[in-house]
Every structure is written in structure tokens, then in C-alpha cells.
Length: 235
Image (cartoon, rainbow, N blue to C red):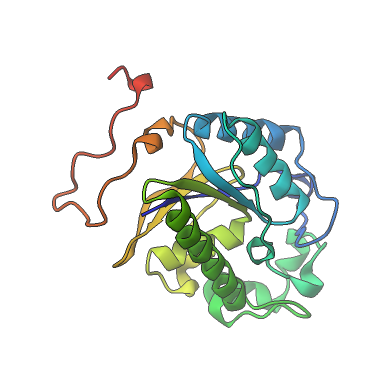
């Protein structure tokens, strides 16, 4: 089965200003965000990616470009609107400190499956289209490139948290227990029986071991021996 790397975009000017950017155009990586994206690209550079699929928003496409430029061979680079940010409707462009005074804020924290943003999208709807998109790309990439294929989906914090919640078998109401930082990498595989989550919210460490594949679908009883050591580990 293929391996999906869920990559959040690097830090943006809106992040540092405390704004909920949503789908607003012209939100770009700041200097720190570019450094984060470059580090993530370096971590993945020794893993031949079959594809880098990106949200259409600028911050994700910028991050995806770092990943693509670090690859020795050019993977496919589609843009998928189903990986775009949640439509926050009337919340878009407002400060997080202001939004925290809204009655809806507490529901976002405690019962996100019931949240529909005014003039926007529901969090449940966001999760449904994002999970369907990742599973669709994963199946297509495995069919074309084989079970050892690795690919990256570059998206947004809440979107990736919702995908991880689905893979972990968590109710959406629990997805706020997850943290997905800027330019972080999470690793998911969709097996015939169930998904398996191999990493969440990593922002450091060598990922070259992914080039060797992750083996069979079945979970090893007792935990197994872990992934093969990489050359950087001195093996």
C-alpha cells in the first residue's frame, strides 16, 4: 500500500498576525515559514515522491514548490480543491482573539461535528471531502506506482487534523486533541483492512527510511522492530 505524507504549509503572515486567513487570496509564507518549508523539503528529499498534491491556496502551493524543488526527479504536482482550507464564511479575516468571544467558539472546541460556520462550511463537510480526496489520490497513486509509492498532500491545519482523526478512528469531536504545526509531516497508510498512522506532527528528524518501504499491511504483534535504519543513522 502507498504511504501518504500529510504536510501542513509553513508559517504565514496571517499566522503571525493572529488572523483566520481561511480561503483569502494573497496569504503567503513569511520568512520563518519559508525556512520551515525548506527544512521539511530537506527531510523528505531522499524519498522519491510519486506525487505532491496541493491545496490551491498560495501558502500550500509555495510549500509544495519547496518539496518539488528538493526532489531529484520531478513528481506529478496536481492541485486539488478538495484539499483546500475550510470555508470559515463570516469568520474569515477576523482575529482569533475576537472570534474567541463568539458563542460558536466553545462549540468549535468541544463539539466540532456540530459546527457550521456562518456563511461557510461545516467541519464535518470539510472532513468528508478531504478524507475522500486523500483516499482517492492514495488509491490512484498505488495503482500507478505500486505499493511502495510515497506521496505528499500539502494542506491546512484543520484539514490535516480531520484526516488524521479519520485514520485514527476518532470521532470528529475529538480532533481538537490533535496538533498539526506549520510545515509538519504526518504519515498515514491506507491498508485493505484499516488505515495505520506512523507519525503525527513531526517537524524534525530524518525521513529517508521511507524510501525503503513500510512493509506489510498487518500490524506486527508486540510492536515489531520499527522501520529500517537509514544510512544517516550509521547502519
